[in-house]
Length: 365
Ligand SMILES: *[C@@H]1O[C@H](CO)[C@@H](O)[C@H](O)[C@H]1NC(C)=O
Ligand SMILES: *[C@@H]1O[C@H](CO)[C@@H](O)[C@H](O)[C@H]1NC(C)=O
Ligand SMILES: *[C@@H]1O[C@H](CO)[C@@H](O)[C@H](O)[C@H]1NC(C)=O
Ligand SMILES: *[C@@H]1O[C@H](CO)[C@@H](O)[C@H](O)[C@H]1NC(C)=O
Ligand SMILES: [Cu+2]
Image (tube, rainbow, N blue to C red; front, side, top):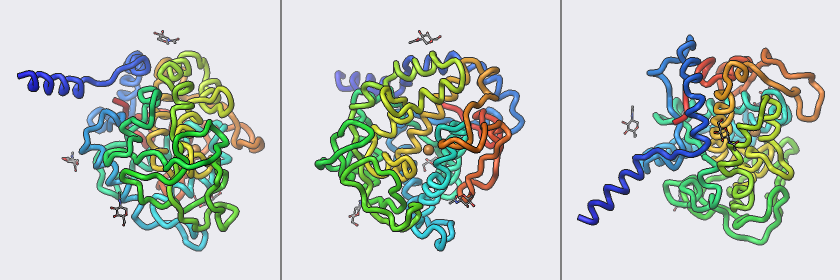
């Protein structure tokens, strides 16, 4: 009887959706997102895909996602091997696209829309090329901020995105030294080979140099991580996400605060450098760690929640230049986003600002 009650309580725990101050802000904005969906000419409620937090997925759902990612990492590249000799797999095609455009998609007016389209394109490839029928899960940084290493995302189990790297003596440039630094030891991606880069490694000892300056040469090596709570417990807590959303009155403030990489560090850099290592800590090559897409789905969710607090005034707005280094002028909503080999179509930034318009038809649980 006692055991039955315990099981029942556990079931209740599992069945109850995780809620926090960030999801309260989602709830607050939900009516305006629903209204936007009704206005869409391409997306309808019955077609809407729902992205969920990793911790809310069943073991079977996690395994289905992992299986699809492993499929992308073992399917052949579609890039020209003469131009991109290091791109061996379909997964590498995404990394190459990100490397190629790094200077024009970070600290720029298209940062949010570019990464939204990129994460969606990856979800599409999982679904269309690898038989996956689920959606791109996200990593709610706040939920696991106290100890990301023991989160279901990074606990190293066979339903995780693999765990930390082996603990080695090392130095870290962008974050306090974490608990790993070496090759990951466990979980589904234990045998994954990183082929492209490095370009700006953030760890010492650094990975071997790429045979080409542009990072597109073939440089097979293990996936290294340096996970710890050093940044997450200070900068990517639920209260940090809430304060980012509440205190950013315009898109410039929202995206710049999110991308801060010094002290304080914003949630964007905070998430990347909570994983750290190689290639997660490499500004150009970071999508080479498969946890990248869970992180960027949360960036995307956070942007959506921020937009939904005042949707009419926060949808068709961008701010910033076209190049991180300056030059190229001011970004415009009419600028095109081109993902070359990993997405069929070019879209204007203005068509990528709503999760239920343009190519998109999804929402967050
Ligand atoms: C890199 O960008 C150039 C245009 O600047 C494009 O022609 C090329 O296809 C891109 N490569 C990849 C891998 O996306
Ligand atoms: C999606 O895939 C899972 C696991 O492979 C399967 O159980 C489920 O029925 C599928 N759902 C749909 C709608 O095809
Ligand atoms: C990694 O490769 C080894 C050797 O081929 C194999 O025994 C092991 O099952 C693989 N592990 C994973 C998680 O794929
Ligand atoms: C953020 O905004 C929400 C809704 O307006 C409010 O309930 C909450 O107290 C605010 N939190 C902070 C930390 O400002
Ligand atoms: Cu990026």
